[in-house]
Amino acid sequence: MNTYDYGSTITLGANFALASGTPADPQTVTLRYLSPTNIPGVGQETIINQAQMQHVSQGAFTYTLTVLMVGVWYYRFEGLGGCNAVQDGVFCVASTPFSDAAG
Image (cartoon, rainbow, N blue to C red; front, side, top):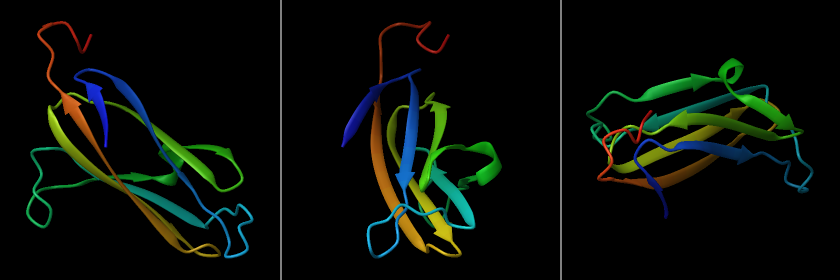
């Protein structure tokens, strides 16, 4: 599991491909993530639509966010249409003794 410092700007990414291994763009890509205060199945998740992501190449999408909460974060990229797939990930945010870490 990757660990980042509180206040870091990180990039989440996903690569979609056909069964043959050829990179392919789904018709729709969605990113869902849960910050440490969200309990899966109970808390409110954040949903990012494709227009808010960067399309870096065929089949490759990224999203950049600043992490302002210590703990374990979960995320999932979902591709639908033409290339149906999901990619789950998890990362940890560590505390820092510096009060200006986010700014």
